[in-house]
Image (cartoon, rainbow, N blue to C red):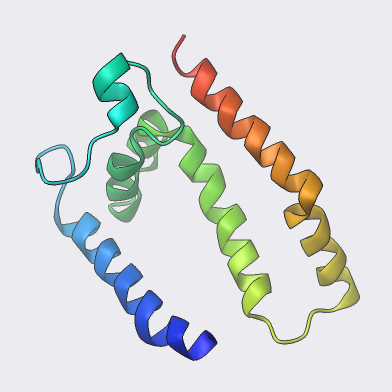
Length: 123
């Protein structure tokens, strides 16, 4: 599984990052639009994510925060989880940290944060 990950997923991810670095989603219409925002005018927790990724890749963190503040917190969280997942052996401390940050309770906390963010950003 890890071999397939390195052969297929990482190059695809690098390609998407290159695409978002080169092309500004504000200026190109082929980037997908949020259907919830299109039909209701309400912003979901993912609205602005593509523009925020473009801004982060250009080191414009203030604009990225204005587009989607959640991404600035999600990137280190997901990155740390990916780091722990790629380690072959975890120390006892790392194992406990992984269980606390990515266990079932943490999943529910993240879910509540994402839903609350989606609700609060529309006021």
